[in-house]
Length: 318
Image (cartoon, rainbow, N blue to C red; front, top):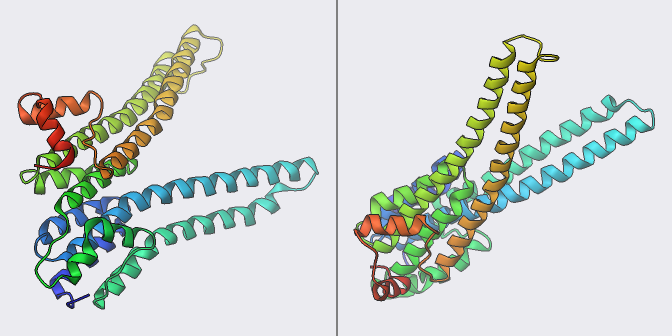
């Protein structure tokens, strides 16, 4: 680095990285730091955008990897218990160490996610230019960070790439239930007036993620409806067997569970769509969700944008 970062720059950068400890809720802090420090400090802006990438992309890879590890470990445990039971052994003696190992695996997985941001904060407190493995150098090239640092004059990060990175991370954060909306919402509030591209992408992302959350709530409501129907049919503490009311209640509960399960199984497809949207934005596209994108575009512009202007917006934010 050409200059040692100031205390203010380091504080913003440290807060951006440490906000990962909030496990999703802190994703708005990197956006706030970037908005506050852009055109003031390339160092703080880059670190904030890097922290935003870690909390969206990094969280996505972490949660998928953790899910695979937990599923594999659980299947191994079930297999061992079944094998022990069939051989006449007491599975209880086997379960205790396995469950202890399962608990330790969970702790290790959480530590794996928390450790890099803590290391980043420590490095930044000493004035270093921290970069996450794989992510850091690629992001620096994408933003033109290294070139700006070596320049003799005052050269800022590439504005279009900054906006695209923030927008894309908002799309990627769909996998963070509820709290993922904080990233695009904050970008919309703080930088929406400066860039139509960022404003449109952020608003449609908030609407899209809000729709996904409504699906979660809908699945829960349908299940609760079925459960309440069963309770009302047989009475609290009643015996549902052999009664027509109980059979009707059980049928409603069963159907409600099937519908709720179908909705829950459908949600990952929306997560995949959000990841695809983020990828398309990083590749330079003016991505628009089906139906949601067009409605949001009409709402914020007052009318559909003409094709010529759409073509302009695809390549350059206005």
